[in-house]
Amino acid sequence: MNLRHGSGIRASFALANAFAAGTAARAACGMRRASSGVGWANVPTLTTSDRPRSALEVMVKRQRGFTLIELMVVVLIIGILAAISIPNFVAMRNRANEGATKANMHTFQLAAEDYAVQNDGRYAPDAALVAVLMPGAGTIFENPFDHSVGVDASWENRTSILDAPNAIPGITSYADSSDTIYNIKGYGKDAALTLVLTSGQ
Image 1 (cartoon, one colour):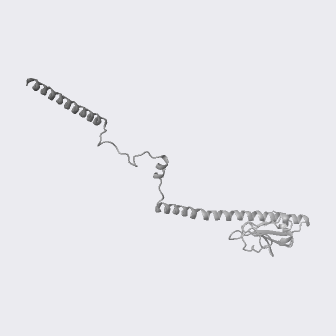
Image 2 (cartoon, one colour):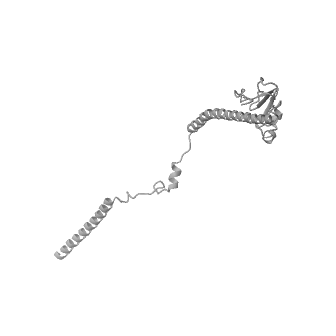
Image 3 (cartoon, rainbow, N blue to C red):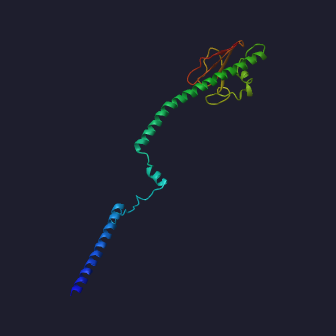
């Protein structure tokens, strides 16, 4: 009776020790998981947004289109710049063409003086006699404004030295008085040029 009682007590102690050991092991395992921040409830779940993204994906995501207001501002700025620059460009081109017209007047004057040298000091009574003495016999003498050539286009003959040139932009106008004196006038974009070339200059 005492032996069976003693054996039962020892079996109970062994069972209790085993239970305690198992409980301690499970507790220790739980502490390790808690200390590492990993537990069944705390295991992170990777989603599409958490995965690494390539540099191309980042660039595409950062790019965005222009808004309507931004486009309107750009168009407005371009319009202002055009309104300022186009009139200035036209004015500069007109001044350049008028300068070329003055150069044509000097070229015509050289031909007029050449005619006088060849004709005992007498000047040509008609502009056509002067035009043939220019390079290309006047066929390459262009109006700077419209690039036309020939009589009443790039040059003309006036009947009197007192007359004004015809209102043809870029024309060179020649007039002679009794084969002894001449003058050469020109017409600019909107008015006659102030420059007047005369014989003996």
